Length: 333
Image (cartoon, rainbow, N blue to C red):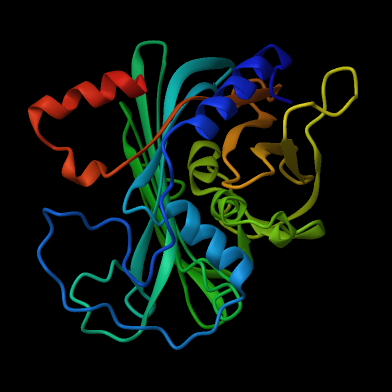
């Protein structure tokens, strides 16, 4: 569980968010990630898919301001036989996405398009002398009735030894994954695996709300791409068990802050992931713990991720030298 000495910080961040920048009004079919400097597009193709309004409207209301949400987290990363300090940046934004090609809709000439919530996570830490840089992106349709699975997730990992790239694409009845790796035991792979929920998409499902769409009980899930890359585990669906409840204090009582936690346990991996989030809109993710055996000594250690700064901003328009001051305001290293 996230350390209780951090709970005051979480409450403070909630207050800042509630008093801070507005998320804006709901949007139509346009994605947020366009901006005034983009080339003009023809009107977006209207989807004929009917959506259940609760989570669709929640996603649009939160991320429909024409800006992306940038969250900066402090991280203590479990790697080798220790915890290593670093930083994780999470970017969440809406985007028009082609269902067949599974890429961003840029030309608006293909009618097979849907609005997705995109979450990108950039994780950087060092292990003694050398650096790790990890990246993941997941594309989850907000039209959950007819598109119940994320269309695509990809992840990369770079360190001084080499790098790996992993991508899963949704097909009719399965996910097709492609792996390119520096390591001999993994090499290059192109195989199919089960069409089940992705751990990476949980971060989008929480932000969409309501929390009822989070699966509970026993089911199968594909772990996050960055976890699979760090641990070199088989790329497949694993049995897990999940439960949702109030964020609990160390003394066993519920937190007075409006926080819930979603906990997933993978028996085969001896791994437990706990995500803490605000149960009120916009369902901000305050942090998470990820406990699993370290590579060298197999002792269970816990990666801790804790929110530090948050801001809605049209980052794609902030690419001038003077805009670097925004990195300071967000505490980006």
